[in-house]
Image 1 (tube, rainbow, N blue to C red):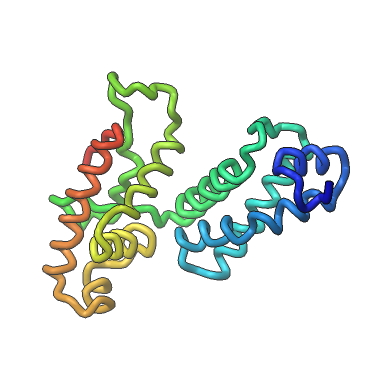
Image 2: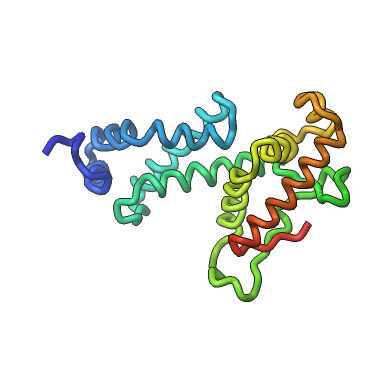
Length: 198
């Protein structure tokens, strides 16, 4: 069988046995999806390339050390690594900030510091990191205008003045969209059995 027609799990086995070509096929097969996934989170080409490379360094290291045990589910596993690295980037740069509805002037309010599990949550063993990843994903389900405001405030750390100028809207409109974004985000969080206090 041609190496290009092999299943992911077979390519991984081949690579672990020393066949470098197998990893090249695996990379070529999935690189566009993983790159687009990272870019959608960051919207920055240079940063996306850095995280993309970091993702594959981590993938290689995991495979080389024999720590991979995903039973052939390579792409979801690779996406999780990429997502974790994106979260790490936001943490390192202290850019993952959020304001409360009642105190929009508090720049140190961090939504990720308030995540907690309820006693009745059926996924008691889920990690804090998984919660954070899910919450970032939920932002994507907001209406476009609310999502944009939230991302500018959370990830770009823009003031409401900056946002109003960038979007050509009044500060009150920016605040209003932020408020509705938080309300809708709360609903999504509750729907997905996450509890957040802000």
